[in-house]
Length: 466
Image (spheres, rainbow, N blue to C red):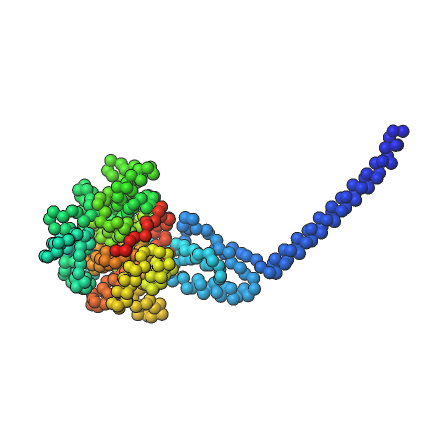
Protein backbone atom coordinates (compact mmCIF):
# COMPACT_ATOMS: atom_id res chain seq x y z
CA UNK A 1 0.00 0.00 0.00
CA UNK A 2 2.84 2.31 0.71
CA UNK A 3 4.21 1.71 -2.75
CA UNK A 4 0.85 2.44 -4.50
CA UNK A 5 0.53 5.64 -2.58
CA UNK A 6 3.91 6.75 -3.87
CA UNK A 7 3.13 6.06 -7.54
CA UNK A 8 0.75 8.98 -8.14
CA UNK A 9 3.28 11.28 -6.58
CA UNK A 10 6.10 10.09 -8.87
CA UNK A 11 4.24 10.72 -12.17
CA UNK A 12 3.92 14.48 -11.90
CA UNK A 13 7.57 14.88 -10.86
CA UNK A 14 8.72 13.04 -14.04
CA UNK A 15 6.55 15.32 -16.15
CA UNK A 16 8.07 18.45 -14.70
CA UNK A 17 11.60 17.12 -15.22
CA UNK A 18 10.83 16.31 -18.86
CA UNK A 19 9.52 19.81 -19.40
CA UNK A 20 12.64 21.31 -17.98
CA UNK A 21 14.80 19.13 -20.25
CA UNK A 22 12.81 20.15 -23.35
CA UNK A 23 13.08 23.82 -22.45
CA UNK A 24 16.88 23.52 -21.94
CA UNK A 25 17.26 21.67 -25.27
CA UNK A 26 15.27 24.33 -27.12
CA UNK A 27 17.25 27.09 -25.42
CA UNK A 28 20.55 25.39 -26.39
CA UNK A 29 19.45 25.09 -30.04
CA UNK A 30 18.44 28.73 -30.07
CA UNK A 31 21.83 29.85 -28.74
CA UNK A 32 23.60 27.58 -31.19
CA UNK A 33 21.66 29.09 -34.09
CA UNK A 34 22.45 32.62 -32.91
CA UNK A 35 26.14 31.74 -32.62
CA UNK A 36 26.19 30.29 -36.14
CA UNK A 37 24.49 33.41 -37.47
CA UNK A 38 27.09 35.56 -35.70
CA UNK A 39 29.94 33.60 -37.30
CA UNK A 40 28.41 34.04 -40.75
CA UNK A 41 28.18 37.77 -40.20
CA UNK A 42 31.82 37.86 -39.09
CA UNK A 43 32.87 36.04 -42.25
CA UNK A 44 30.95 38.49 -44.39
CA UNK A 45 32.33 41.58 -42.67
CA UNK A 46 35.95 40.72 -41.85
CA UNK A 47 36.88 37.69 -43.94
CA UNK A 48 39.35 34.95 -43.20
CA UNK A 49 43.02 35.27 -42.37
CA UNK A 50 45.56 32.73 -43.48
CA UNK A 51 49.14 32.41 -42.37
CA UNK A 52 51.68 32.85 -45.11
CA UNK A 53 55.38 32.23 -44.81
CA UNK A 54 57.79 33.24 -47.52
CA UNK A 55 61.55 33.08 -47.21
CA UNK A 56 64.62 31.15 -48.12
CA UNK A 57 67.35 29.52 -46.15
CA UNK A 58 67.43 28.02 -42.73
CA UNK A 59 66.63 29.36 -39.29
CA UNK A 60 65.36 32.73 -38.26
CA UNK A 61 66.82 35.42 -36.11
CA UNK A 62 66.17 35.41 -32.42
CA UNK A 63 62.91 36.96 -31.36
CA UNK A 64 61.43 37.08 -34.88
CA UNK A 65 58.15 35.38 -35.61
CA UNK A 66 58.01 32.87 -38.46
CA UNK A 67 54.62 33.83 -39.84
CA UNK A 68 52.59 36.73 -41.13
CA UNK A 69 48.84 37.01 -41.50
CA UNK A 70 47.53 37.86 -44.93
CA UNK A 71 43.88 38.87 -45.49
CA UNK A 72 42.46 37.22 -48.62
CA UNK A 73 38.90 38.51 -48.68
CA UNK A 74 37.64 40.92 -51.28
CA UNK A 75 39.64 41.09 -54.51
CA UNK A 76 42.06 38.19 -54.11
CA UNK A 77 43.89 38.87 -57.36
CA UNK A 78 44.46 42.50 -56.39
CA UNK A 79 45.91 41.50 -53.02
CA UNK A 80 48.14 38.90 -54.63
CA UNK A 81 49.42 41.47 -57.11
CA UNK A 82 50.23 43.95 -54.34
CA UNK A 83 52.07 41.26 -52.42
CA UNK A 84 54.06 40.24 -55.50
CA UNK A 85 55.04 43.86 -56.07
CA UNK A 86 56.25 44.12 -52.48
CA UNK A 87 58.22 40.90 -52.92
CA UNK A 88 59.86 42.12 -56.13
CA UNK A 89 60.68 45.42 -54.49
CA UNK A 90 62.79 43.69 -51.85
CA UNK A 91 63.93 40.53 -53.62
CA UNK A 92 67.04 42.20 -54.96
CA UNK A 93 68.21 42.99 -51.44
CA UNK A 94 67.60 39.68 -49.69
CA UNK A 95 64.96 37.22 -48.55
CA UNK A 96 62.00 38.63 -46.64
CA UNK A 97 58.72 37.55 -45.17
CA UNK A 98 56.17 39.55 -47.09
CA UNK A 99 54.09 41.95 -45.06
CA UNK A 100 50.38 42.10 -45.79
CA UNK A 101 49.21 45.35 -47.43
CA UNK A 102 48.21 47.83 -44.75
CA UNK A 103 49.76 45.77 -41.96
CA UNK A 104 51.64 47.66 -39.25
CA UNK A 105 53.97 44.74 -38.57
CA UNK A 106 57.60 45.11 -39.60
CA UNK A 107 58.84 43.26 -42.66
CA UNK A 108 60.85 40.28 -41.49
CA UNK A 109 64.14 39.44 -43.18
CA UNK A 110 65.62 35.98 -43.58
CA UNK A 111 68.93 34.49 -44.68
CA UNK A 112 69.42 33.00 -48.13
CA UNK A 113 71.62 30.21 -49.39
CA UNK A 114 75.32 30.80 -50.04
CA UNK A 115 77.25 28.55 -52.40
CA UNK A 116 80.29 27.95 -50.23
CA UNK A 117 82.76 25.28 -51.25
CA UNK A 118 82.36 22.13 -49.19
CA UNK A 119 85.70 22.31 -47.40
CA UNK A 120 88.71 24.56 -46.90
CA UNK A 121 91.11 21.70 -47.69
CA UNK A 122 91.43 22.50 -51.39
CA UNK A 123 91.21 26.29 -51.31
CA UNK A 124 93.90 28.03 -53.34
CA UNK A 125 94.36 31.79 -53.34
CA UNK A 126 93.98 33.08 -56.92
CA UNK A 127 97.26 33.98 -58.61
CA UNK A 128 95.87 37.34 -59.68
CA UNK A 129 94.74 38.27 -56.16
CA UNK A 130 97.57 40.82 -56.08
CA UNK A 131 96.62 42.42 -59.38
CA UNK A 132 94.93 45.38 -57.73
CA UNK A 133 95.95 49.04 -57.83
CA UNK A 134 99.41 49.33 -56.32
CA UNK A 135 100.90 52.27 -54.42
CA UNK A 136 102.54 52.89 -51.06
CA UNK A 137 100.78 54.18 -47.97
CA UNK A 138 102.47 55.59 -44.88
CA UNK A 139 100.65 56.93 -41.84
CA UNK A 140 101.03 60.05 -39.73
CA UNK A 141 102.55 58.77 -36.49
CA UNK A 142 102.99 62.00 -34.51
CA UNK A 143 101.93 65.64 -34.68
CA UNK A 144 103.98 68.55 -33.40
CA UNK A 145 102.50 71.39 -31.45
CA UNK A 146 101.84 74.29 -33.83
CA UNK A 147 103.82 77.50 -33.29
CA UNK A 148 102.13 80.34 -31.43
CA UNK A 149 99.44 77.99 -30.08
CA UNK A 150 99.19 77.96 -26.31
CA UNK A 151 96.48 75.33 -25.92
CA UNK A 152 97.03 72.11 -27.84
CA UNK A 153 95.33 68.77 -27.26
CA UNK A 154 96.65 65.66 -28.96
CA UNK A 155 93.98 63.51 -30.64
CA UNK A 156 93.88 59.87 -31.71
CA UNK A 157 92.75 60.88 -35.21
CA UNK A 158 95.13 63.83 -35.36
CA UNK A 159 94.32 67.32 -36.60
CA UNK A 160 93.81 66.79 -40.30
CA UNK A 161 93.35 70.00 -42.26
CA UNK A 162 90.78 70.24 -45.06
CA UNK A 163 93.58 70.60 -47.61
CA UNK A 164 95.22 67.42 -46.30
CA UNK A 165 91.88 65.67 -46.32
CA UNK A 166 91.30 66.53 -49.99
CA UNK A 167 94.73 65.29 -51.07
CA UNK A 168 94.33 62.03 -49.16
CA UNK A 169 91.59 60.86 -51.56
CA UNK A 170 94.09 60.45 -54.41
CA UNK A 171 95.37 56.89 -54.77
CA UNK A 172 99.13 57.42 -54.96
CA UNK A 173 102.16 57.15 -52.71
CA UNK A 174 101.40 59.29 -49.69
CA UNK A 175 101.45 59.71 -45.92
CA UNK A 176 98.00 60.29 -44.47
CA UNK A 177 96.11 60.39 -41.20
CA UNK A 178 94.73 57.01 -40.21
CA UNK A 179 94.32 56.95 -36.44
CA UNK A 180 96.98 56.10 -33.82
CA UNK A 181 98.41 59.63 -34.06
CA UNK A 182 100.56 60.50 -31.05
CA UNK A 183 101.13 63.93 -29.61
CA UNK A 184 104.47 65.67 -29.13
CA UNK A 185 106.98 64.19 -26.65
CA UNK A 186 105.73 64.56 -23.11
CA UNK A 187 102.05 64.58 -24.11
CA UNK A 188 99.77 61.82 -22.81
CA UNK A 189 98.78 58.86 -24.95
CA UNK A 190 95.97 59.49 -27.45
CA UNK A 191 94.48 56.11 -26.64
CA UNK A 192 93.68 52.60 -27.82
CA UNK A 193 96.67 51.12 -26.03
CA UNK A 194 97.53 47.39 -26.00
CA UNK A 195 99.72 45.25 -23.79
CA UNK A 196 102.98 44.21 -25.44
CA UNK A 197 102.05 40.52 -25.41
CA UNK A 198 98.79 41.27 -27.24
CA UNK A 199 100.64 43.40 -29.79
CA UNK A 200 103.11 40.57 -30.36
CA UNK A 201 100.24 38.12 -30.89
CA UNK A 202 98.39 40.38 -33.34
CA UNK A 203 101.55 41.00 -35.35
CA UNK A 204 101.67 37.28 -36.22
CA UNK A 205 98.14 37.12 -37.69
CA UNK A 206 97.82 36.47 -41.42
CA UNK A 207 94.03 36.23 -41.41
CA UNK A 208 92.09 37.99 -38.64
CA UNK A 209 88.47 37.88 -37.50
CA UNK A 210 87.70 40.66 -35.04
CA UNK A 211 84.91 42.29 -33.07
CA UNK A 212 84.65 44.53 -30.02
CA UNK A 213 82.57 45.22 -26.92
CA UNK A 214 83.07 48.54 -25.16
CA UNK A 215 81.08 49.83 -22.21
CA UNK A 216 79.55 46.36 -21.55
CA UNK A 217 77.14 47.01 -24.42
CA UNK A 218 76.85 43.36 -25.46
CA UNK A 219 77.12 39.77 -24.42
CA UNK A 220 80.05 37.71 -25.68
CA UNK A 221 78.95 35.67 -28.72
CA UNK A 222 81.30 32.79 -29.39
CA UNK A 223 81.70 31.64 -33.02
CA UNK A 224 79.86 28.40 -33.77
CA UNK A 225 82.79 26.03 -33.32
CA UNK A 226 81.34 23.16 -35.36
CA UNK A 227 81.13 25.46 -38.41
CA UNK A 228 84.82 26.41 -38.19
CA UNK A 229 87.35 24.02 -39.72
CA UNK A 230 90.30 22.72 -37.72
CA UNK A 231 92.60 24.45 -40.21
CA UNK A 232 90.97 27.85 -39.56
CA UNK A 233 91.03 27.27 -35.80
CA UNK A 234 94.80 26.87 -36.04
CA UNK A 235 95.59 29.53 -38.66
CA UNK A 236 93.03 32.32 -38.21
CA UNK A 237 93.21 34.83 -35.35
CA UNK A 238 89.86 35.45 -33.62
CA UNK A 239 90.25 38.64 -31.56
CA UNK A 240 87.63 40.29 -29.37
CA UNK A 241 88.57 43.81 -28.22
CA UNK A 242 87.15 44.88 -24.86
CA UNK A 243 87.69 47.62 -22.31
CA UNK A 244 88.33 46.93 -18.63
CA UNK A 245 84.67 47.50 -17.72
CA UNK A 246 83.58 44.86 -20.23
CA UNK A 247 86.28 42.45 -19.08
CA UNK A 248 84.89 42.62 -15.56
CA UNK A 249 81.35 42.10 -16.86
CA UNK A 250 82.40 39.08 -18.91
CA UNK A 251 83.76 37.46 -15.77
CA UNK A 252 80.46 38.02 -13.95
CA UNK A 253 78.68 36.46 -16.97
CA UNK A 254 80.77 33.32 -16.55
CA UNK A 255 83.29 33.93 -19.36
CA UNK A 256 86.61 33.24 -17.66
CA UNK A 257 89.79 33.69 -19.69
CA UNK A 258 92.17 30.74 -19.77
CA UNK A 259 95.89 31.15 -19.12
CA UNK A 260 96.45 32.18 -22.76
CA UNK A 261 93.77 34.87 -22.69
CA UNK A 262 91.13 32.92 -24.65
CA UNK A 263 87.40 32.38 -24.20
CA UNK A 264 86.53 29.68 -26.69
CA UNK A 265 87.97 30.78 -30.05
CA UNK A 266 88.15 34.44 -29.02
CA UNK A 267 91.47 35.85 -27.93
CA UNK A 268 90.30 38.63 -25.61
CA UNK A 269 92.45 41.76 -25.99
CA UNK A 270 91.98 44.52 -23.44
CA UNK A 271 92.11 48.07 -24.81
CA UNK A 272 93.18 50.71 -22.31
CA UNK A 273 92.72 54.47 -22.50
CA UNK A 274 89.80 54.63 -24.92
CA UNK A 275 90.29 57.51 -27.38
CA UNK A 276 86.66 58.74 -27.49
CA UNK A 277 83.86 59.25 -24.99
CA UNK A 278 81.42 58.05 -27.63
CA UNK A 279 81.64 54.24 -27.49
CA UNK A 280 80.28 53.96 -31.02
CA UNK A 281 83.12 56.08 -32.36
CA UNK A 282 85.64 54.06 -30.35
CA UNK A 283 84.25 50.91 -31.96
CA UNK A 284 85.14 52.27 -35.41
CA UNK A 285 88.85 51.89 -34.63
CA UNK A 286 88.96 48.07 -34.84
CA UNK A 287 86.16 48.09 -37.41
CA UNK A 288 88.01 50.21 -39.99
CA UNK A 289 91.67 50.00 -39.01
CA UNK A 290 92.29 46.26 -38.98
CA UNK A 291 95.19 46.77 -41.40
CA UNK A 292 96.89 48.88 -38.72
CA UNK A 293 96.05 46.64 -35.77
CA UNK A 294 97.08 43.46 -37.63
CA UNK A 295 100.07 44.78 -39.62
CA UNK A 296 101.04 41.40 -41.11
CA UNK A 297 97.53 40.31 -42.01
CA UNK A 298 96.53 39.83 -45.64
CA UNK A 299 92.82 39.44 -44.96
CA UNK A 300 90.42 40.43 -42.20
CA UNK A 301 86.77 39.96 -41.33
CA UNK A 302 84.86 42.32 -39.07
CA UNK A 303 81.57 41.48 -37.38
CA UNK A 304 79.61 43.50 -34.85
CA UNK A 305 79.36 42.09 -31.34
CA UNK A 306 75.61 41.58 -31.82
CA UNK A 307 76.45 38.77 -34.26
CA UNK A 308 77.64 35.18 -33.81
CA UNK A 309 79.81 33.87 -36.62
CA UNK A 310 78.25 30.80 -38.27
CA UNK A 311 80.64 30.17 -41.17
CA UNK A 312 84.29 29.38 -41.73
CA UNK A 313 86.37 32.55 -42.30
CA UNK A 314 88.34 31.07 -45.21
CA UNK A 315 85.16 30.01 -46.98
CA UNK A 316 83.85 33.56 -46.51
CA UNK A 317 87.02 35.06 -48.02
CA UNK A 318 86.90 32.65 -50.96
CA UNK A 319 83.25 33.36 -51.70
CA UNK A 320 83.12 37.15 -51.29
CA UNK A 321 86.63 38.15 -52.40
CA UNK A 322 88.42 35.51 -54.46
CA UNK A 323 85.44 34.30 -56.43
CA UNK A 324 84.32 37.85 -57.31
CA UNK A 325 87.86 39.25 -57.77
CA UNK A 326 87.13 41.85 -55.07
CA UNK A 327 89.27 43.50 -52.42
CA UNK A 328 86.47 44.74 -50.17
CA UNK A 329 83.02 43.27 -49.45
CA UNK A 330 80.13 44.73 -47.47
CA UNK A 331 76.37 44.15 -47.64
CA UNK A 332 73.66 46.62 -48.60
CA UNK A 333 71.22 47.86 -45.97
CA UNK A 334 68.13 45.70 -45.58
CA UNK A 335 65.67 48.62 -45.92
CA UNK A 336 67.30 51.90 -46.97
CA UNK A 337 69.43 52.61 -50.02
CA UNK A 338 69.68 56.40 -50.19
CA UNK A 339 71.67 58.64 -47.82
CA UNK A 340 68.72 61.06 -47.72
CA UNK A 341 66.60 58.27 -46.19
CA UNK A 342 69.35 57.37 -43.74
CA UNK A 343 69.64 60.97 -42.56
CA UNK A 344 65.90 61.18 -41.86
CA UNK A 345 65.94 57.82 -40.05
CA UNK A 346 68.83 58.88 -37.81
CA UNK A 347 66.95 62.03 -36.86
CA UNK A 348 63.65 60.25 -36.36
CA UNK A 349 65.21 57.68 -34.02
CA UNK A 350 67.39 60.28 -32.29
CA UNK A 351 70.55 58.37 -33.22
CA UNK A 352 72.78 61.43 -33.05
CA UNK A 353 72.66 65.17 -32.53
CA UNK A 354 70.64 66.67 -35.40
CA UNK A 355 72.87 69.72 -35.75
CA UNK A 356 75.92 67.50 -36.23
CA UNK A 357 74.04 65.36 -38.77
CA UNK A 358 72.99 68.44 -40.76
CA UNK A 359 76.53 69.82 -40.75
CA UNK A 360 77.90 66.58 -42.16
CA UNK A 361 75.09 66.09 -44.68
CA UNK A 362 75.29 69.66 -46.00
CA UNK A 363 79.05 69.33 -46.40
CA UNK A 364 78.61 66.15 -48.47
CA UNK A 365 75.90 67.66 -50.67
CA UNK A 366 78.08 70.69 -51.38
CA UNK A 367 80.87 68.29 -52.42
CA UNK A 368 78.78 66.42 -54.97
CA UNK A 369 76.85 63.74 -53.09
CA UNK A 370 73.69 62.91 -55.03
CA UNK A 371 70.62 60.80 -54.34
CA UNK A 372 70.65 57.10 -55.09
CA UNK A 373 68.80 56.31 -58.32
CA UNK A 374 68.07 52.58 -58.73
CA UNK A 375 66.85 53.15 -62.29
CA UNK A 376 70.19 54.61 -63.40
CA UNK A 377 72.15 51.88 -65.23
CA UNK A 378 75.39 53.70 -64.41
CA UNK A 379 74.86 53.61 -60.64
CA UNK A 380 78.14 52.16 -59.33
CA UNK A 381 76.58 50.37 -56.34
CA UNK A 382 73.29 48.54 -55.71
CA UNK A 383 72.82 50.74 -52.64
CA UNK A 384 74.36 53.86 -51.14
CA UNK A 385 73.63 52.70 -47.58
CA UNK A 386 75.51 49.67 -46.24
CA UNK A 387 74.70 47.30 -43.41
CA UNK A 388 78.16 47.68 -41.96
CA UNK A 389 77.99 44.97 -39.33
CA UNK A 390 79.94 42.51 -41.49
CA UNK A 391 82.98 43.48 -43.60
CA UNK A 392 85.38 41.23 -45.52
CA UNK A 393 88.67 42.81 -46.63
CA UNK A 394 91.85 42.09 -48.45
CA UNK A 395 94.57 44.37 -47.11
CA UNK A 396 95.42 45.90 -50.48
CA UNK A 397 96.52 49.53 -50.90
CA UNK A 398 93.11 50.62 -52.24
CA UNK A 399 91.22 48.78 -49.51
CA UNK A 400 93.49 50.26 -46.84
CA UNK A 401 93.13 53.75 -48.28
CA UNK A 402 89.34 53.48 -48.36
CA UNK A 403 89.32 52.27 -44.75
CA UNK A 404 91.49 55.19 -43.63
CA UNK A 405 89.33 57.69 -45.51
CA UNK A 406 86.12 56.26 -44.06
CA UNK A 407 87.58 56.33 -40.55
CA UNK A 408 88.67 59.96 -40.99
CA UNK A 409 85.08 60.91 -41.86
CA UNK A 410 83.82 59.24 -38.69
CA UNK A 411 86.54 61.01 -36.71
CA UNK A 412 85.72 64.42 -38.24
CA UNK A 413 81.91 64.23 -38.31
CA UNK A 414 79.36 61.92 -36.65
CA UNK A 415 80.01 58.32 -35.63
CA UNK A 416 77.13 57.17 -37.87
CA UNK A 417 79.29 55.50 -40.53
CA UNK A 418 76.34 54.73 -42.82
CA UNK A 419 76.11 58.47 -43.51
CA UNK A 420 79.68 58.68 -44.81
CA UNK A 421 80.08 55.40 -46.72
CA UNK A 422 78.67 56.47 -50.10
CA UNK A 423 80.35 59.88 -50.03
CA UNK A 424 83.75 58.31 -49.29
CA UNK A 425 83.41 55.60 -51.93
CA UNK A 426 82.07 57.91 -54.66
CA UNK A 427 84.68 60.59 -54.05
CA UNK A 428 87.51 58.04 -54.08
CA UNK A 429 86.15 56.62 -57.33
CA UNK A 430 85.63 60.06 -58.91
CA UNK A 431 89.16 61.28 -58.18
CA UNK A 432 90.80 58.06 -59.40
CA UNK A 433 89.03 57.13 -62.64
CA UNK A 434 91.92 54.98 -63.89
CA UNK A 435 92.59 53.25 -60.58
CA UNK A 436 89.63 50.99 -59.82
CA UNK A 437 88.59 49.93 -56.35
CA UNK A 438 86.95 46.51 -56.50
CA UNK A 439 84.18 46.68 -53.92
CA UNK A 440 81.63 43.86 -53.73
CA UNK A 441 78.33 44.98 -52.19
CA UNK A 442 76.51 41.74 -51.52
CA UNK A 443 72.93 41.02 -50.49
CA UNK A 444 71.72 41.52 -46.95
CA UNK A 445 70.25 38.01 -46.88
CA UNK A 446 73.77 36.66 -47.44
CA UNK A 447 74.99 38.63 -44.43
CA UNK A 448 72.24 37.01 -42.36
CA UNK A 449 73.42 33.59 -43.49
CA UNK A 450 76.95 34.28 -42.24
CA UNK A 451 76.07 35.10 -38.65
CA UNK A 452 73.18 34.91 -36.22
CA UNK A 453 71.90 38.33 -35.19
CA UNK A 454 71.01 39.28 -31.62
CA UNK A 455 69.92 42.47 -29.90
CA UNK A 456 72.44 44.64 -28.07
CA UNK A 457 72.58 44.30 -24.31
CA UNK A 458 72.32 48.08 -23.97
CA UNK A 459 72.68 51.08 -26.27
CA UNK A 460 75.04 53.94 -25.44
CA UNK A 461 73.43 57.24 -24.64
CA UNK A 462 73.14 59.96 -27.28
CA UNK A 463 76.61 61.46 -27.79
CA UNK A 464 77.09 65.17 -27.21
CA UNK A 465 77.62 67.70 -29.96
CA UNK A 466 81.24 67.32 -31.13
